[in-house]
Image (tube, rainbow, N blue to C red; front, side, top):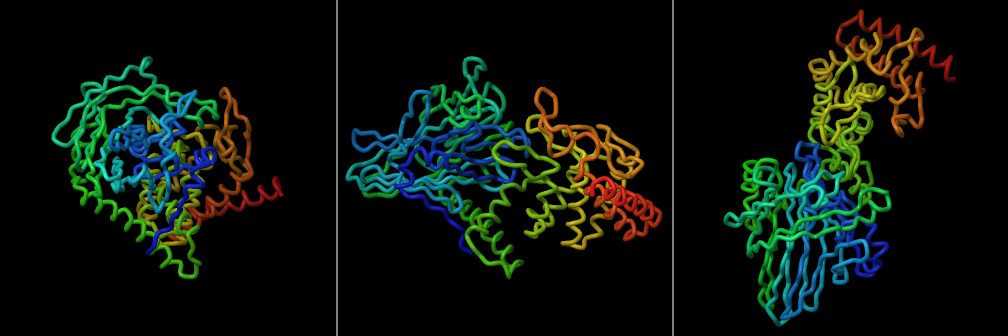
Length: 505
């Protein structure tokens, strides 16, 4: 099945102020991603060609900021990279950019005199790897030298690097075709390897890169990156050369080596990986349209379906890119659309099981912090959305066996904990409505520790979700032959229904 495509022409790319605001992102199913602008200029501290989730889906770390290229024809060199500093943009390689496309991976097409450069970025699924494909067409009448300069880092996505305040000790070593860059004498490690060409170590810092979007947001906007050296390739006159550079990140070298060996790294191996990623998306779309035959096909819908895939990670849903973490509320509100409508029932089960294991005091986690991964439970409704997602799962699958064997006891515990009273003053009142403290709904923004929209008491949507929870567990208790529980939940639901009408209607 043909994948949707977006193509941006030279005229549009020439409007710098507009083009620099257009961004792309590719994800790897682990929580990691590659992202930049259509000009190749990083405008956010969250941008990078390899932002790896080192503790999936969390601990997202900017490992490879970008790859900057340079074409040398005869004695003249032409940089294709583009970087912004506080008082200037240098180099301005976007002046050679003739086309940008997303189909579904980002592809940059440059023209320098009679030399055409095509650069495509993709990530293999479930691997912390970024691969950049290069196709060089030399019709210049002279041999061409092509260099690729990696700009690397090792920082959390919310941070920036100041090499003078937080000194980095980069240690690099070349082993066969692989460049091993370590941050200090031990772990972690970044491995870089090209399918051909040669690598020359030439370490230097590129300081005070300026991220205009962070400046606009009043965030830290200056960053230092390390340039360890460059890859160099020679292209004979009237020849075409194809090669690729793969970058792998891990906190353990043995794991990084293992991933690199799985890629194999001839250009043909890389092409096969690329085709596998294309095919995975094609199969995803084919399955969706096969199961929704009455739906009118269109690029807009295909893009939407493909975008759904970007948010699904192992046992969780990313709340949003670039910086949102895994949120319980967002996960279970979105689960029906992301996984049930699209027929990804096994993914849905993994999410249910992962959150069930983290249930504490009758509460499903509100969110999983990216840095620590330790669950925070300050939400009254995430648990209720969990129960609603279970109900929706049953509507799509009729899989009562899975619920009975894996989730039913947790669901009963949730209701009992709410009824008896749990943390954050969450408890069922005598009117059988749910009472809670101030900062536990979706309006949870706080300034200096104080909620901007305090909603202590009985928030209206929470009561509707609570009533839905009671009716759901009543239904399941009946289905599973637990008559006493069914009657108990029915009585509570009837009372909650009357109280809701009295207080809110």
